[in-house]
Length: 213
Length: 213
Image 1 (spheres, rainbow over the protein chains, first blue to last red):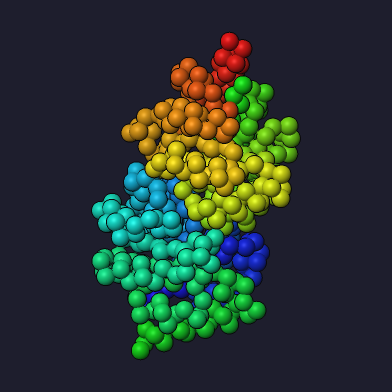
Image 2 (cartoon, chains in turn purple, cyan; image 1 turned 90 degrees about the horizontal axis):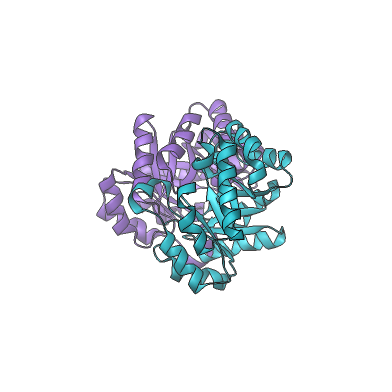
């Protein structure tokens, strides 16, 4: 059954308020890039302390100094750290080495990768096992959704864990769930909802019911 | 005359200790990506308060949500914010819009860009005027230095301001200075020196003497 990852991109206090309502429906809490920029690893430490049972992802989008930068997030208590698929192979290897050292996981953010199938082959070769297909916030209006890429990657690499991110809402679950992503990343559809707890619950239920069907 | 940008990538306290010794020789202080990850915008605010006369760059390496993420850094007191040349044009435009709104400057980090000359044409078209040629830390051993690209960009785009970064030390100044970069970014050659103040002074003097020659 797909896991629900809640991306927190706003202020830390707003994120904590959303989590208080939504945490029971969430599998992975993402400290989003803007929140990392605002608060640094304090955001990871605060959420880690408040919700020790949740998996915690730090969305660093590492582009260089893979091992040193991943060390920062794992050292602060993150379970998963992101690196860009666009980064060099040495950077990916560095992040993976950090993850092995610290029992952490590296998610490769495929944002901006021109040929995801080709890059996925290289990433698999390097030892990556978790990829995130990510439509950039700045391109959601233009590009539409990456369902087709998800289907292609699922077929070509059945052993890969796949996450999907970028403008995901309740409305698109019926299109996404049949493609069997391991992780569904939701941000504003929960955080900007009038009732974030209710929104998270509906998405959680949607995922669960599909898994039972 | 080229400006000296000092990149602080370690702990904030280490960075402040280096700055105390080196600040008189430095034009721009860079809050490096690892320091942003550790401390968030607190690092920008602390350095801003301690050195109100220095220009301050936040090395966010923006890849998405250009306007919102640049807003975070400019709002904290940064004069310059970095965005990745690899990011989409909408992201670049968003960061530039933030810079215009807040009288801040956007430096485009060309790290990982396959064809810098081609991308520079597009970036110039978008309104970018400051590019940084950057050899990834993870690739410095393999790739050598991007002097050739600097020379090519200087020739093709004489109006562009160019920075050069990645493993720069006193030893390579004689190769770099004749290519007339506007900004020379130095990190560990100063921060990891036995005497950071003396190292910064030597590089500063090297730049000044070349400018006078």
